[in-house]
Image (tube, rainbow over all chains, first blue to last red; front, side, top):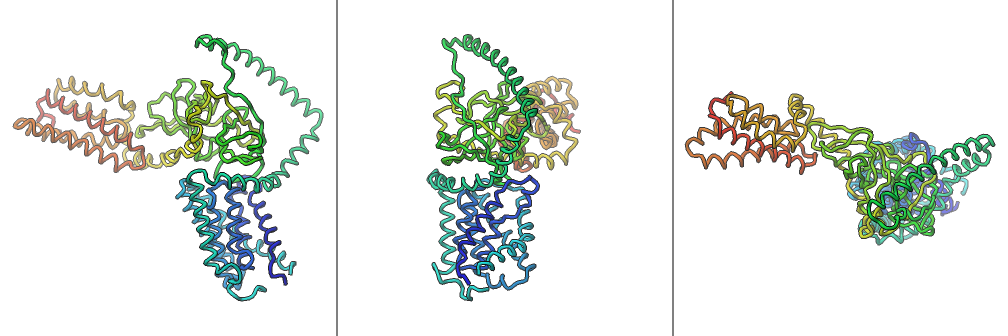
Length: 157
Length: 448
């Protein structure tokens, strides 16, 4: 057992970031889940001591740079949801996959709500309802993403 | 799983503590990023970190294009060469004509020497193929401060204005397109010289001109040029073409849509332009410092919400629209409208009511509100017969208040200044009409 899968964590986060900014046709872009958010969530649930809030914060900062939002916006949102995930990681871990998906959906909605509020406060409102689509696809994609990340995690052990 | 059961407080304090620290850090960063430019250096650094990833992400499509280019057949290349030669000849001919015209123009202006073109230097940049924010219109180009690119620089493609740079890193720069919902370009209609502002709509094939009054001279097919105001873009560069002009009788402003000339979805290469300072067409140097932020945050929000208030207002009163449509030119009608009740009152019976109804111009509620004010009239003359000077002040004060109350409550999201102005004008018009009618006509016969 390797208690600190730090390398795997950073590598998968980078991969997820690349998946997040990969150019796609417009209709796929709308339904693309936020892979980086899912990955960060997975790591804060699976190994809360290694990743956790710091991983969330810095991933969010990178998202801010790539999505050209106000610096700190995604960082704050990701810090919040990683905090919840780290706090409740034992409860979430013990749930079956379907219930995990539901929890992830709720967390993603919370995440997007924080972004939505910050967008409003900073006078860059994006009121299109399309921005909420990725919460649903993110919940659907949670199981495969978690399975893939589990595989990398297991191989390391 | 395998990581023990403790509540993960082994390192760096409890999660709550760490969360508080990071959340506060985020909020401070956001605050600093919003106010002033203290975080420019941080952004610069983060841009450096992000650029390799951006390059990596865009590398497959770059490689694909490179492969396509290098494996292009001889026929394809020859065809392209022919096309480009033809195009070049065309452009040379046009440029010849342009030189002559420019010379003539300078002579007419009385300038001794021909002015050099306003664009001093060009730099071709490639768009990095990367998905930024889904809902916003941004691109990243592969030139940065190392190439002399600066913040707030105009970006064009070969057909027209494309956007301006916002954040500039050492090797890359972020460009906000003119179709982004937060971007606004000061433009001028080429045919008439009318200046206005073109705002992005978030749709890459459309710009909105939300600040043109309903009687503005704008037609489908008008070409929009940059007006040179605002300090970012020089004057005289093509922006787009008007494709839709919608004049609603109940709206003080026209709804005009234009399509940009620049082909934002197809472009692979764009041009960054440096302009000669002191040139008459150059963007004003005095404002160029803060104009970038001012220009980007020009509050284009009025553009999208405007259509919404139209529907509820227009829907309930279809009858009022005919009266409004006949009086579609607001300020023009009011003045001719005032004398007509006078000569109409010479034949006194009931003509004043329809005559006074047209001046309430731009909104149907004013048309509805016309009759009530006319109903005010019949009670008015009877007191006027006994004490004229007390009734006269009482009436005009009541009428504008009613008008303002109507307009501000019924059209909250509409441009209120204009609406109130129009309402005041109509109120004044109807009061003058009423006094004129009262002066000349024996009043009590007009009771319907």
